Length: 176
Image (cartoon, rainbow, N blue to C red; front, side, top):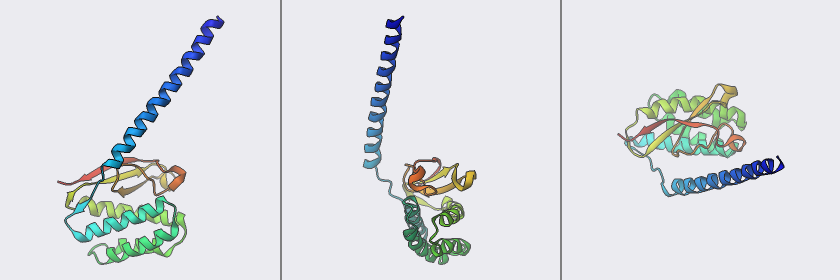
């Protein structure tokens, strides 16, 4: 009986070690694949491309939980949105983010900003690359939140380092 019990423990330990090695190998190959392929985005409408690029800067500032950088990025984005016909209300939202140094408030407004920009960019003529619409079900007290990304890898702007990889790719907006 002791021998059977000992073999069972030994087998379980060996299985756990093998699983760790396999997951480490898988993670390593995934990282090199993601690093070697850069997703360059090209949008026919230069104004939409500028808006998307500035939005990504804002998202990245929120990923880093950097309220000051988020303010600066949102101020630049606000000006671009104000200059784009029909985006004046969205520019006001970017202005609210630029006016606040409270990360929680910025992230709450980022939800509305993201929804507007997702709608804007779904109709964009993408010439090259893929824009990823990503979703975190836990954002906004469980109501969820979406955002745009130029990378398939999840980097959650609603939680930063607290839950950096929480989320999934909900949709891909690709070149036609």
